[in-house]
Image (cartoon, rainbow, N blue to C red):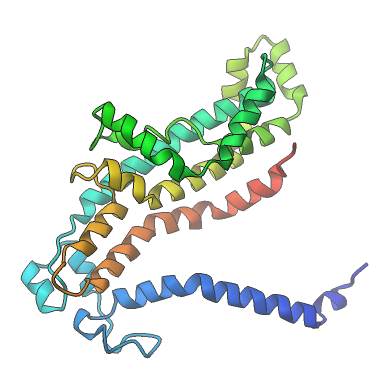
Length: 299
Protein backbone atom coordinates (compact mmCIF):
# COMPACT_ATOMS: atom_id res chain seq x y z
CA UNK A 1 0.00 0.00 0.00
CA UNK A 2 1.51 3.32 -1.05
CA UNK A 3 2.03 6.05 1.54
CA UNK A 4 1.87 9.85 0.99
CA UNK A 5 5.68 9.89 1.02
CA UNK A 6 5.80 7.26 -1.74
CA UNK A 7 3.33 9.27 -3.83
CA UNK A 8 5.52 12.42 -3.56
CA UNK A 9 8.72 10.52 -4.44
CA UNK A 10 10.30 11.64 -7.71
CA UNK A 11 10.91 8.67 -9.98
CA UNK A 12 12.04 8.47 -13.63
CA UNK A 13 8.61 7.14 -14.58
CA UNK A 14 6.88 10.07 -12.91
CA UNK A 15 9.21 12.60 -14.54
CA UNK A 16 8.62 10.99 -17.93
CA UNK A 17 4.85 11.07 -17.40
CA UNK A 18 4.87 14.76 -16.46
CA UNK A 19 7.13 15.54 -19.42
CA UNK A 20 4.63 13.82 -21.71
CA UNK A 21 1.75 15.81 -20.16
CA UNK A 22 3.61 19.08 -20.63
CA UNK A 23 4.46 18.28 -24.26
CA UNK A 24 0.86 17.28 -24.94
CA UNK A 25 -0.40 20.54 -23.40
CA UNK A 26 2.02 22.64 -25.42
CA UNK A 27 1.10 20.88 -28.67
CA UNK A 28 -2.62 21.23 -27.91
CA UNK A 29 -2.57 24.86 -26.80
CA UNK A 30 -0.03 26.28 -29.24
CA UNK A 31 -2.54 26.71 -32.14
CA UNK A 32 -4.89 28.60 -29.79
CA UNK A 33 -2.05 30.82 -28.59
CA UNK A 34 -0.90 31.54 -32.16
CA UNK A 35 -4.46 32.36 -33.20
CA UNK A 36 -4.75 34.93 -30.39
CA UNK A 37 -1.29 36.34 -31.10
CA UNK A 38 -2.11 36.81 -34.77
CA UNK A 39 -5.48 38.35 -33.91
CA UNK A 40 -3.88 41.14 -31.85
CA UNK A 41 -1.05 41.82 -34.33
CA UNK A 42 -1.48 44.86 -36.62
CA UNK A 43 -2.07 43.73 -40.20
CA UNK A 44 0.82 45.70 -41.64
CA UNK A 45 3.27 44.25 -39.09
CA UNK A 46 2.27 40.58 -39.37
CA UNK A 47 5.01 39.52 -41.81
CA UNK A 48 7.88 41.02 -39.80
CA UNK A 49 6.60 40.62 -36.24
CA UNK A 50 6.65 36.94 -35.40
CA UNK A 51 9.73 36.51 -33.23
CA UNK A 52 8.45 37.30 -29.74
CA UNK A 53 5.81 35.71 -27.57
CA UNK A 54 3.65 38.82 -28.03
CA UNK A 55 3.49 41.33 -30.92
CA UNK A 56 5.41 44.59 -30.56
CA UNK A 57 2.26 46.70 -30.91
CA UNK A 58 -0.75 44.63 -29.78
CA UNK A 59 -4.11 46.00 -30.89
CA UNK A 60 -7.82 45.16 -30.78
CA UNK A 61 -8.43 46.82 -34.14
CA UNK A 62 -8.76 43.45 -35.93
CA UNK A 63 -11.66 42.53 -33.64
CA UNK A 64 -13.32 45.88 -34.42
CA UNK A 65 -12.91 45.13 -38.13
CA UNK A 66 -14.66 41.75 -38.06
CA UNK A 67 -17.40 43.16 -35.83
CA UNK A 68 -18.10 45.84 -38.43
CA UNK A 69 -17.17 48.76 -36.16
CA UNK A 70 -14.85 50.41 -38.74
CA UNK A 71 -15.25 51.31 -42.40
CA UNK A 72 -13.64 49.36 -45.24
CA UNK A 73 -11.31 52.25 -45.94
CA UNK A 74 -10.10 52.23 -42.33
CA UNK A 75 -9.68 48.44 -42.52
CA UNK A 76 -7.59 48.66 -45.69
CA UNK A 77 -5.51 51.49 -44.22
CA UNK A 78 -4.69 49.24 -41.25
CA UNK A 79 -3.50 46.41 -43.50
CA UNK A 80 -6.75 44.46 -43.84
CA UNK A 81 -8.28 43.29 -47.13
CA UNK A 82 -11.52 45.23 -46.66
CA UNK A 83 -13.49 41.95 -46.80
CA UNK A 84 -16.95 42.13 -45.25
CA UNK A 85 -18.15 39.85 -42.45
CA UNK A 86 -21.67 40.28 -41.00
CA UNK A 87 -20.54 38.69 -37.75
CA UNK A 88 -23.72 39.02 -35.70
CA UNK A 89 -25.96 37.62 -38.48
CA UNK A 90 -23.73 34.55 -38.86
CA UNK A 91 -23.47 34.23 -35.08
CA UNK A 92 -27.28 34.14 -34.86
CA UNK A 93 -27.42 31.48 -37.57
CA UNK A 94 -24.82 29.37 -35.74
CA UNK A 95 -26.74 29.67 -32.47
CA UNK A 96 -30.01 28.59 -34.13
CA UNK A 97 -28.31 25.73 -36.02
CA UNK A 98 -26.47 24.48 -32.94
CA UNK A 99 -29.42 24.95 -30.57
CA UNK A 100 -31.90 23.05 -32.75
CA UNK A 101 -29.62 20.06 -33.34
CA UNK A 102 -28.45 19.92 -29.72
CA UNK A 103 -31.96 19.95 -28.23
CA UNK A 104 -33.66 17.65 -30.71
CA UNK A 105 -30.80 15.17 -31.08
CA UNK A 106 -30.36 14.84 -27.30
CA UNK A 107 -34.11 14.26 -26.86
CA UNK A 108 -34.42 11.68 -29.62
CA UNK A 109 -31.22 9.88 -28.58
CA UNK A 110 -32.53 9.62 -25.01
CA UNK A 111 -35.80 8.14 -26.25
CA UNK A 112 -33.99 5.64 -28.48
CA UNK A 113 -31.46 4.72 -25.78
CA UNK A 114 -34.24 4.08 -23.24
CA UNK A 115 -36.15 1.93 -25.74
CA UNK A 116 -33.07 -0.21 -26.42
CA UNK A 117 -32.35 -0.50 -22.68
CA UNK A 118 -35.79 -1.19 -21.22
CA UNK A 119 -38.45 -1.99 -23.82
CA UNK A 120 -38.82 -5.56 -25.08
CA UNK A 121 -39.70 -6.04 -28.73
CA UNK A 122 -38.81 -8.55 -31.43
CA UNK A 123 -35.44 -7.94 -33.07
CA UNK A 124 -34.37 -5.35 -30.48
CA UNK A 125 -30.81 -6.62 -30.05
CA UNK A 126 -30.35 -7.14 -33.80
CA UNK A 127 -31.60 -3.62 -34.50
CA UNK A 128 -29.32 -2.20 -31.83
CA UNK A 129 -26.34 -4.09 -33.32
CA UNK A 130 -27.10 -2.69 -36.76
CA UNK A 131 -27.53 0.78 -35.28
CA UNK A 132 -24.22 0.65 -33.43
CA UNK A 133 -22.61 -0.78 -36.58
CA UNK A 134 -23.30 2.58 -38.22
CA UNK A 135 -20.44 3.90 -36.06
CA UNK A 136 -18.12 2.17 -38.53
CA UNK A 137 -19.42 4.21 -41.48
CA UNK A 138 -17.34 7.38 -42.05
CA UNK A 139 -19.56 10.49 -42.21
CA UNK A 140 -18.08 11.46 -45.59
CA UNK A 141 -19.80 8.39 -47.12
CA UNK A 142 -23.25 9.81 -46.30
CA UNK A 143 -22.47 13.39 -47.31
CA UNK A 144 -23.39 13.20 -50.99
CA UNK A 145 -26.58 11.08 -50.51
CA UNK A 146 -27.77 13.51 -47.86
CA UNK A 147 -27.01 16.48 -50.08
CA UNK A 148 -28.87 14.90 -53.03
CA UNK A 149 -31.90 14.25 -50.80
CA UNK A 150 -31.92 17.78 -49.37
CA UNK A 151 -31.62 19.23 -52.87
CA UNK A 152 -34.45 17.02 -54.13
CA UNK A 153 -36.64 18.32 -51.30
CA UNK A 154 -35.74 21.91 -52.28
CA UNK A 155 -34.32 22.54 -48.80
CA UNK A 156 -31.08 24.26 -49.90
CA UNK A 157 -30.55 27.49 -47.91
CA UNK A 158 -33.12 26.50 -45.27
CA UNK A 159 -32.76 25.53 -41.63
CA UNK A 160 -34.60 22.24 -42.22
CA UNK A 161 -31.98 21.33 -44.81
CA UNK A 162 -29.20 22.23 -42.39
CA UNK A 163 -30.46 20.14 -39.49
CA UNK A 164 -32.16 17.25 -41.34
CA UNK A 165 -29.26 14.72 -41.40
CA UNK A 166 -28.34 15.23 -37.72
CA UNK A 167 -31.59 16.08 -35.99
CA UNK A 168 -32.83 12.58 -35.13
CA UNK A 169 -29.95 10.73 -33.47
CA UNK A 170 -26.39 9.52 -33.72
CA UNK A 171 -25.25 5.93 -33.01
CA UNK A 172 -22.70 6.93 -30.37
CA UNK A 173 -25.14 9.07 -28.38
CA UNK A 174 -27.75 6.30 -28.39
CA UNK A 175 -25.12 3.76 -27.34
CA UNK A 176 -23.82 6.04 -24.56
CA UNK A 177 -27.26 6.78 -23.10
CA UNK A 178 -28.38 3.14 -23.37
CA UNK A 179 -25.41 2.06 -21.29
CA UNK A 180 -26.37 4.53 -18.59
CA UNK A 181 -30.07 3.56 -18.65
CA UNK A 182 -29.03 -0.08 -18.13
CA UNK A 183 -27.37 0.98 -14.87
CA UNK A 184 -30.54 2.45 -13.37
CA UNK A 185 -32.01 0.05 -10.75
CA UNK A 186 -35.14 -1.62 -12.07
CA UNK A 187 -36.72 -1.34 -8.62
CA UNK A 188 -37.31 2.35 -9.18
CA UNK A 189 -39.27 1.76 -12.38
CA UNK A 190 -41.12 -1.28 -10.98
CA UNK A 191 -42.29 0.79 -8.01
CA UNK A 192 -43.63 3.40 -10.42
CA UNK A 193 -45.39 0.68 -12.46
CA UNK A 194 -47.08 -0.61 -9.30
CA UNK A 195 -48.32 2.93 -8.66
CA UNK A 196 -49.94 2.93 -12.10
CA UNK A 197 -47.39 4.91 -14.10
CA UNK A 198 -46.89 3.95 -17.75
CA UNK A 199 -43.60 3.69 -19.63
CA UNK A 200 -44.01 7.20 -21.04
CA UNK A 201 -44.57 8.72 -17.57
CA UNK A 202 -41.65 6.76 -16.13
CA UNK A 203 -39.38 8.00 -18.90
CA UNK A 204 -40.31 11.67 -18.52
CA UNK A 205 -40.80 11.98 -14.76
CA UNK A 206 -38.32 9.45 -13.34
CA UNK A 207 -35.64 8.41 -15.83
CA UNK A 208 -34.86 11.77 -17.43
CA UNK A 209 -34.52 13.72 -14.13
CA UNK A 210 -31.99 11.22 -12.74
CA UNK A 211 -29.92 11.17 -15.94
CA UNK A 212 -29.18 14.88 -16.17
CA UNK A 213 -25.42 14.26 -16.19
CA UNK A 214 -25.30 11.90 -19.20
CA UNK A 215 -27.86 14.03 -21.03
CA UNK A 216 -25.72 17.09 -20.44
CA UNK A 217 -22.70 15.18 -21.71
CA UNK A 218 -24.46 14.29 -24.95
CA UNK A 219 -25.82 17.84 -25.30
CA UNK A 220 -22.42 19.43 -24.72
CA UNK A 221 -20.51 17.19 -27.13
CA UNK A 222 -23.25 17.62 -29.73
CA UNK A 223 -23.16 21.41 -29.33
CA UNK A 224 -19.38 21.59 -29.73
CA UNK A 225 -19.42 19.30 -32.78
CA UNK A 226 -22.26 21.21 -34.42
CA UNK A 227 -20.76 24.62 -33.67
CA UNK A 228 -17.51 23.63 -35.36
CA UNK A 229 -19.17 21.90 -38.31
CA UNK A 230 -17.97 23.36 -41.60
CA UNK A 231 -18.47 21.10 -44.62
CA UNK A 232 -22.21 20.39 -44.38
CA UNK A 233 -23.26 24.05 -43.77
CA UNK A 234 -20.93 25.11 -46.57
CA UNK A 235 -22.75 22.75 -48.96
CA UNK A 236 -26.41 23.32 -48.10
CA UNK A 237 -26.47 26.85 -46.68
CA UNK A 238 -24.38 29.13 -48.91
CA UNK A 239 -26.91 31.99 -48.67
CA UNK A 240 -26.56 34.94 -46.30
CA UNK A 241 -29.70 34.21 -44.28
CA UNK A 242 -28.66 30.69 -43.24
CA UNK A 243 -24.85 30.87 -43.48
CA UNK A 244 -23.20 29.85 -40.21
CA UNK A 245 -20.09 31.40 -38.70
CA UNK A 246 -17.60 28.67 -39.70
CA UNK A 247 -18.63 28.84 -43.36
CA UNK A 248 -18.66 32.64 -43.25
CA UNK A 249 -15.06 32.72 -41.99
CA UNK A 250 -14.02 30.53 -44.92
CA UNK A 251 -15.71 32.92 -47.36
CA UNK A 252 -14.14 35.90 -45.55
CA UNK A 253 -10.68 34.46 -46.30
CA UNK A 254 -11.54 34.04 -50.01
CA UNK A 255 -12.72 37.63 -50.45
CA UNK A 256 -9.21 38.87 -51.16
CA UNK A 257 -8.18 36.81 -54.25
CA UNK A 258 -5.74 39.42 -55.58
CA UNK A 259 -3.98 40.17 -52.29
CA UNK A 260 -2.49 38.21 -49.44
CA UNK A 261 -5.09 36.48 -47.20
CA UNK A 262 -6.37 38.63 -44.34
CA UNK A 263 -4.89 36.42 -41.62
CA UNK A 264 -5.27 38.95 -38.80
CA UNK A 265 -8.96 39.46 -39.54
CA UNK A 266 -9.53 35.72 -39.93
CA UNK A 267 -7.81 34.96 -36.62
CA UNK A 268 -9.79 37.69 -34.86
CA UNK A 269 -13.05 36.25 -36.22
CA UNK A 270 -11.96 32.73 -35.27
CA UNK A 271 -11.08 33.84 -31.74
CA UNK A 272 -14.51 35.45 -31.32
CA UNK A 273 -16.23 32.34 -32.68
CA UNK A 274 -14.52 30.16 -30.06
CA UNK A 275 -15.93 32.15 -27.12
CA UNK A 276 -19.42 30.54 -26.98
CA UNK A 277 -17.97 27.00 -27.03
CA UNK A 278 -15.33 27.96 -24.49
CA UNK A 279 -18.01 29.29 -22.13
CA UNK A 280 -19.98 26.05 -22.48
CA UNK A 281 -16.93 23.96 -21.60
CA UNK A 282 -16.02 26.23 -18.65
CA UNK A 283 -19.51 26.10 -17.12
CA UNK A 284 -20.38 22.46 -17.86
CA UNK A 285 -17.05 20.67 -18.48
CA UNK A 286 -16.66 19.43 -14.88
CA UNK A 287 -20.16 17.97 -14.86
CA UNK A 288 -19.37 16.24 -18.18
CA UNK A 289 -16.32 14.51 -16.67
CA UNK A 290 -18.24 13.56 -13.52
CA UNK A 291 -21.10 12.02 -15.51
CA UNK A 292 -18.74 9.94 -17.65
CA UNK A 293 -16.99 8.63 -14.53
CA UNK A 294 -20.36 7.91 -12.87
CA UNK A 295 -21.87 6.09 -15.86
CA UNK A 296 -18.94 3.70 -16.24
CA UNK A 297 -20.32 2.58 -19.65
CA UNK A 298 -21.78 -0.66 -18.30
CA UNK A 299 -22.64 -3.35 -20.85
